[in-house]
Image (tube, rainbow, N blue to C red; front, side, top):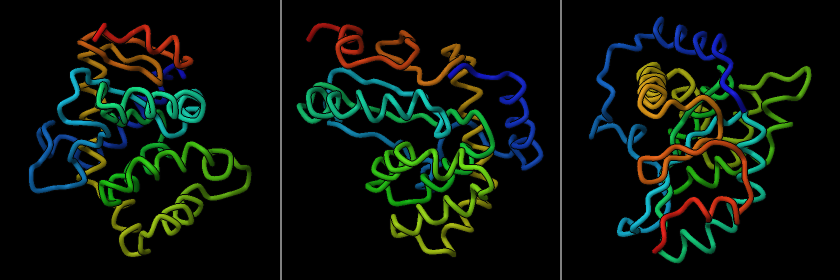
Length: 203
């Protein structure tokens, strides 16, 4: 999904009002919400960074149609380590990212997949409150209401995500989601497994 510049600037502006420059861009060692979210062996020779928005329909399609094969053939076999990077394109995606990062690390990927699989329910349904729908999803993942409210109101994490997003945009020129960085090279767009596999360096 191409980045709508005005939308992205609006997200960043909201983060600035919440104190976006209160923290350095690097993750705080004492804050687990800012820790890397990844799957795969730490010893994998290939590291893939995925830049995604939880309200991106192309990201959802990639997660549903391509990612299972990537996981079984590349990640579970130890060839690839997959690193998730939040790149929210709107306020709804940013709120969802906050909630996902407040879950225990081992629940992050399953929760993200669940959100992608139910976008029509919590992100795009007419006449619903997206935050209320996110709460229902978070409750199913084992999050308490107290933890959910703390996640949605976490101004520090919100600022950090926006700082990371801006840094990634500056460094990799990310202008659409999903985008992938492999061996310092950016690739963009939803693709099938064969097309993605061709991007990887020969083992």
